[in-house]
Image 1 (cartoon, rainbow, N blue to C red):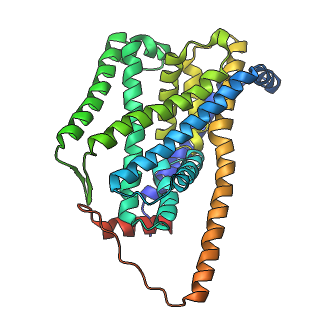
Image 2 (cartoon, rainbow, N blue to C red):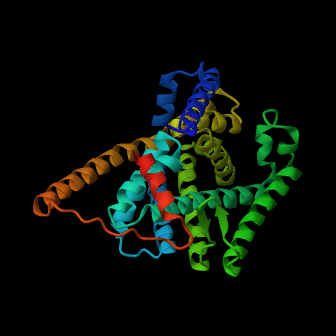
Image 3 (spheres, one colour):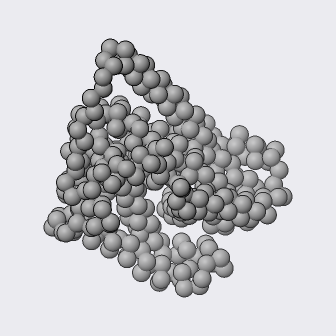
Length: 353
């Protein structure tokens, strides 16, 4: 019998799409497709190229997430090429499917167990990658609020007044940076690990922590760069405001569990950009479409090809192995100290089914 949580998150994601879709329709019902297409064609080719390069930076940093997690586990025998392809496929699919933690876990489980990792190791890898992204969001979010505490005034009237107050925003920003500082101190001093049920999460070594603080902001800067370069220079508020708006939009979209954050990302971003006329609205929509094409749709198409090729090679290897050695002897599981490996392995296998 399936758990209730397996039905709740898809329902939440569907509800988020419907609600945000309604508000997005109200926002865009006076906009014509021809005007949006004209705005897309008006983006200079060199800025399209810069947006494409930003996409490569973002996905390269995501591959670094996996590499960092593997180093934390002491796994060094997996090639950079395999890690990059696995990471690219994981994020390209999970970004479009939604519920990225769970969908990403299934893709990684399939790929990394083929390289000898246990389910427990994959669980730690997924958790560390998710936390690396969270850490980067907190770090850059705190930085943008400290640098420009007036950013939240863009949402004045749509958020409670105390949240849009610059003084409150500054306090929130300092608190976010303080959280990152505590994490750094915990890693340096090797504080006691955090226990979550059967999972034991230890502070990573300082070298791993330092890599996290580089990789996570790099990915988010690259992703925000896509939409920044797609915006026309005349109405571009600057990289810091665009970064802050992107972080808020992307975080809300992920929290909604809507597939690809569809509708959720757009309505938050468009609302926070302070549109004053139809021309600006068309330009912002064009920039969002470019972002979706580069960050979501093209990677999704490529990832399907990668998955098909991987599964085909696995099937061919299984057929060849079965023909040459009909008796398969299972290898002993790899146990990670401090983890209930059997429990995690059983959970991940159930999700894979």
